[in-house]
Image (tube, rainbow, N blue to C red):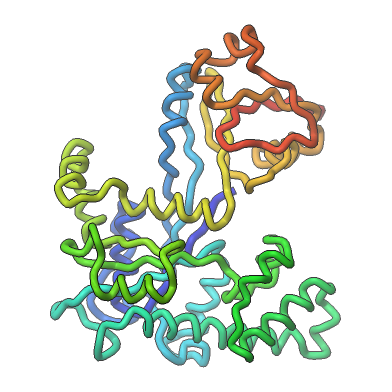
Length: 357
């Protein structure tokens, strides 16, 4: 499975600049006027994982294949987007297709970069976007709850729509739905308000290490858990450097991780994802799964036939694989286990599936 994150925000907050930095490309046009981006740009990025390189060396693999994450640069939304302002309905439909939403919030002053509002106010900007998404959800819910459409809903979807509608109308928190329904059920609803969210405060270079008054106010209101402080401009500069220059520059400005790594970690955290590996002479490969995934479901990520005909999973933990230098020594030392259909795959497991075709 590939995680898909949509980058949203008001015009001119740095979405295309961040997209270019994350995807290390110039695929997204970055310019100083609203609605520069009309159709969404999509970039597929390999997920960095040092474990993959270590496994490749031990297995002497011919190929190394990372799992991937997709970033979608969605055009800037404005107040009234749910009613079609600024091509808003089209832009909102693009957001419905992503797994998680990255809210990019402008937290920097600049006379050179136009701002759609008269002042810099990250809290207000986020509330504009969230309100437009809720209004769009309400319109969608009302249509789906009409008598002619209601018959197409199962009981769970009906409940999700009704509860969400009540919460939005009463201005109540709807996060409790995550404990009432499965992730699959919530995703099937297609509601923007229910999508997992990451807040990214886009700052200038001098604020990259400790933030500024804008980020402090934002974190005070929305808490730090899902908030990252990143400079889209700095990320772009980092990508123009070679490995050694990149390390030196990051050390000089006081950052330990790139924005890409921070977003991937946070994305995996909020979507409750993990990684397992397959490793042998032909290839070493990373696979993304949901937490608490059973061995047959993990096998299905490779091929549906693996899941249908699943018999057993030869399983070695990452540390055992590294310590014992691969499959053969792990088997000899009793570090390889045969796991059945009920086995819950753990992050970092190296698996080899036995199956009937």
